[in-house]
Image 1 (tube, rainbow, N blue to C red):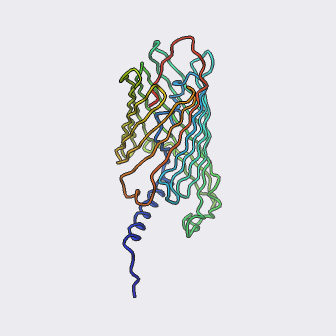
Image 2 (image 1 turned 60 degrees about the horizontal axis):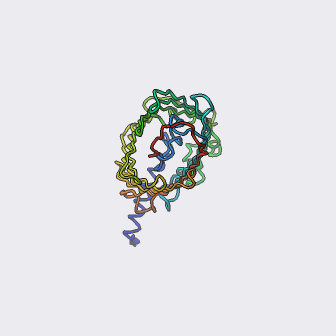
Image 3 (image 1 turned 180 degrees about the horizontal axis):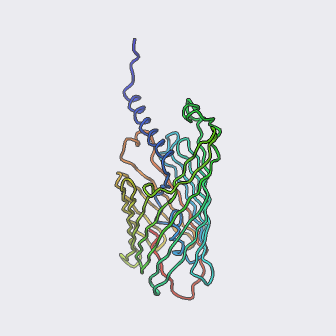
Length: 319
């Protein structure tokens, strides 16, 4: 006699299978970092944005995607950047850690940017990041880890290393900015020799993701400022983000983002002591995954060791 299957449970199993397939695709494809508050502290993923800060700055972000679903992506990034005195250079260092399904990655990279100043209200910067990415595949989470690893000892697919590189250009004029950048020029993978695996790095033009972002700040009243930005991601597919924020007294901001993959993001941030900014984002996806997850949560902290300036500086919209 066949056992009757609960339709609700069957529906959940189907959604879980779909999500698992997406996770596997993310894990074994070229992994590009995904953030909702990228416009608030841009050096996280764009090295050419370093000169938008005239002082030492620190950014920290944690993102938990599809919370409540086992193996869902988790991302942590720390970025520390500073200008070099009496020069047009900014330098920095970053750390990035991610978990996606059975994949674990940890990267460290150095940032450098050079600013070309046109006048007191506009400049162009060029930025480059170079780093090392350590990654592992934890096949012990799978039912048949040996077959899943294509016959290799799963232990050999740990502590693999590959290079990573990012490049960008950033133009600023008054309250407007436009930037193009690549979150990773190189594709990570591994090769197998005599049943031993080692990390590999590949440059393949067709695998590069291109990002273009533009933003503008504009006054609404004496105490309220509007910030708007848009991001276009181009690879094998094209995705766009539209972002809008109201900033009250340059202290409290509330905003919303819409993504063309049918996601809506609620954003809120507050600036404390004119140096510390705290931000929170909640992503709501209007897809089948919402039935097996509790949405995506992201927390951001940024701190700027601001000094008193003797002359006017270009204030770039943080959105």
